[in-house]
Image 1 (cartoon, rainbow, N blue to C red):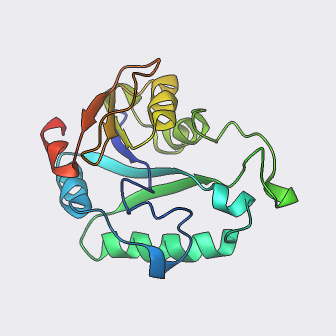
Image 2 (cartoon, rainbow, N blue to C red):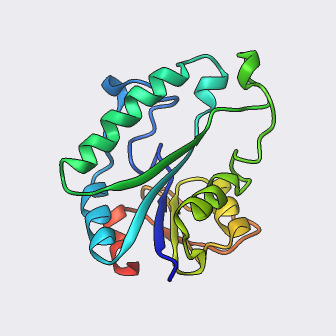
Length: 180
């Protein structure tokens, strides 16, 4: 039987979004992320991170910088007994300044490419899965992929105007735990 997954955006969900975070020194975990992911693992969810990384296309940090930070982040979860099945990222942006990464991509949210790749790799049941993001592009990608439960993390700010897809809102990660 296909497994369910908890899909997480990175910036704004796993870490505080300081804008183009590409170094460990600028990475601060969002309060409650370890409790939420521990609970998800305990309830049979695989953890998959889905993140646009336009900072690579804009030249703010390199692909290697991103990989170093990702290994550090994944290790922080693993030290707490929380396995991350995958971190999928899209380094492309149509208005980038690094030629190798300046283009459109089916992996770039709001497109569902990264989610569909995770589904293929891990035989995931998207109808039983959850996506938590902090942008409407996250919600649109999750809907396009067929993820049943979509949660927009608002960080206590006013929710954005309604999008063309349905989603729930939560001000803090602890408000999401009851969904698992």
